[in-house]
Amino acid sequence: MKQHYILLLFIPLFIGCSLAEIDFMRAVKKAENGNFEEAISLFNRIIESDREIPDELVLMATQMRGHTYGHMFHVTHDSTCLYSAIDDLSVYLSVHPDGIDAVRKSGMIYKDLGDFERAAIDYRHLVELEPSNWVNVSRLARLLRFNLDQKERAIDVLDSALLRQPDDIELLLLRAQFNTHDRNFSGAEEDINRIFELDPNSYRAICAQGGVHVFSQHWEEAVAEYTRAIEVDSTHWVAYYQRANILRYLGRTEEAEADSIRGHYLRYGDE
Image (cartoon, rainbow, N blue to C red; front, side):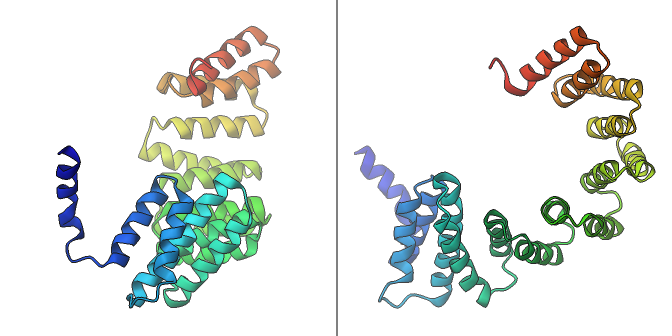
């Protein structure tokens, strides 16, 4: 009786839906649950069907099959999944070139394939489509810097974004990080000070200031900043690890070990 009752609850969801639409909903759910092969089988049934199915539904099924292949790769590590995903996403993007989810997934898959130049094209397009989304900007800047070794272009991307969004803390932090690694300490501190104006007790900005001192080899100042970060938030592991590294370098091994143990516990629990 209970099974019949549950079935009755779902019947309204399917009223007016075609079999293909029901297959699509089932496939999406299976993909969300990690049943990738079953999901792909259902998407195939829509895409390869002889029935009259709206073109847009076939396109959506093709896009979602591409997404599913992409997720499947991270489980199976079978690179053929990536090529299948690109094939499907290319079909969808040929009709909807500004489809944000498809563009994002395409860029991520090209990055997984090691085609960083092609990934950068998609990531740039994402920034054009959603210029206020800091995640898109960060993704492009990191790709340019770390995968393509284009440090100046990475900074240019952040500069342009911060002209539009001068108070975006995430982008300010990222530019401060890049400038610190490039030993542009004045540029890094300018961004960090701006974050402090927006949030005087920003844990990550304090850690970023500690990083500037580390790169400039001002060890005691770095210890002081990480100590300050711990006073602001004693539940986060980063400052403990960073302070431990410096203390160990300074020969203060007992203090370093205590910080390492505390940081490890906060990061991993009782492992």
